[in-house]
Amino acid sequence: MQKIRIIALDDAKANVIAALHVMGAIDLRKSKLELSDDKPASYSTDVSDSLIKINGALQLLPVEKTRIKHESHLGAEKAIEEVKTSAYINSIYDLGNERKSINDDQKALDYAEHIAHLFRDLKMDFSRLKSEYLLFRAFETDSKGEKAFRKRMEKSRHPYELQVRKADKKSYAILVAYDRKENIDEFYKGIKVSELDLSARYLAGTPAEVLDSIRKKKDEANRRLQEIEKELAGMGRQHYSRLLVLKEVLEVELERSEVSSNFKCTDSTFLIEGWVQKRQVDEVRARLASVTGGKVVVELMESDELAPTHTRRPKFLQPFDYLVSFYSVQRSDEIDPTWIFILSFPIFYGLMVTDVGYGLASLLLATIIARKTDPEGLMYNAAKVWQLNSFAAIFFGLLSNQWFGFQLNQYIAPFQGFNWLKDTPALIAITVLFGVLQVTLGLAIGVINSRSHGHKKLAAARFASILVVVFGTVAVAGAFFGAFSAIITEISGAIAIVSLLATALLSGSEATEITNLITHPLSYARIMGFGLGSVIIAFLIDMAFTPHLSSGPIIFAIYLIIFILLHFLNMLLSIFEGIVQGVRLNFVEFFTKFYIGNGIKFKPFGFKRVYTKE
Picture: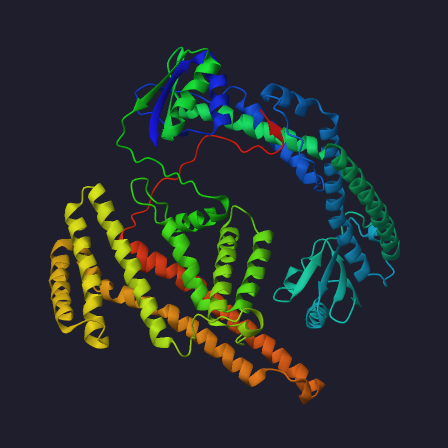
């Protein structure tokens, strides 16, 4: 990455910003020079307001599938003017406001309908419940509340009139008329009652008249709502694609109008700083010279600032970058571990799931999740990684001849690379060897990273740690398994002990991590453990619950349900452990040997167009 500084005349600002935006090459940084801060463009507020209006109109319309035409970019002034003057946008808002008003009115209708329903059998007129001398109040309560309320009122010395109606099995409606000078609040304190508003809209006439009027109003409102939905649908078919074009234009212009707040300026010039890829420096210089008539300066800068991290990988592997950055964005001045993660994670997952049937099922589940989730989110990217890992599970399932626990290779491809039950010792050795190799590789990367950052003592400690892991492995293999001669075992043991002491002396605060040199390589044996566990459980399920037609249709059906359910649960457990343990082995046992992280992701100033072109 290369940091550059761009200086140009103020009247070329719009062209420079547009050129940089189209290129999407520069990650902008605020200059530390003691110059005045530039300001957003004067039309920024108008663009923002217009964009809000467009987004509001799109939310009011039903979503329409649109053909992408890549219309030419309008520019801020034309887009703002079109939003202000387009009659169809105002019509969409008018229909939306009318729909909202009708829906809001439905609440008032429902409330009035509820009250009228409660008192539907009483001979009363809501419009006449007004008097200079009397107050009318209504309540809704349950049977217990009705008894308590009636009892208190009967003990009262105040004149009143009480009407009680059982509205349904649980609800009672109470109507009380009493002298305005009196206060009956004390009669319902502590009782579960809900007061009803007799002055609510649409309460005019007898309960029957109110219910009939409300029914007619609701029918009319529903008809109008249907008409509004049809009108909005028609406007959507006619104008939805145009609104998407305007939205994209305004989003582009909003970014361009606000970006100058990152610039510095003088009376007649402006200054931009930022990071670009070294291979694009000449392209940026040539493009800016073209749009400014050569009146621009692009100079390379020396900077102690940490450069942003930019990775280039095939699209189908980019979800691995997402997972690594979710853990922590790598620094631009450290070795990229993602390629190792890309290679190791599927292997670990494949060995722990290790079944063709489970692999195919996990591939199906991962594909469904990927199609249903946001491409920018964690679930989508995890699902895309899971898809690739599923192929590894299928591959290792073929090697170990596992098809939902059955041995079926002889019918398809008569080949078996290993047997989980017979080759367990060899698989333990292989998985631990995986650990030794990956931990050693992590320490080697740590040596390189530490030296590049000037931490020579730490680099020496990590080199000594490599000797501990390598020669310690040889010593253990020779002493306990006879893999090496006595002399090689003794020499390796001595080197490992001396290297361990050197690691402790050189590591400083990291000396507490020395025990991990032993435990982390051994942690990789969990690959064998979970893989073997999955195979054994699948075998036991097949042995105990494989359905046979000879047992009769009912027993066959019961066994088939149990068979499918148990295999499904075993598959979920295998998938879960394969993902969790595969990630853990990389992020905990491997990354901790070298990874610094906390980098800055390269975010160039640019826009990915869908509906328009420059």
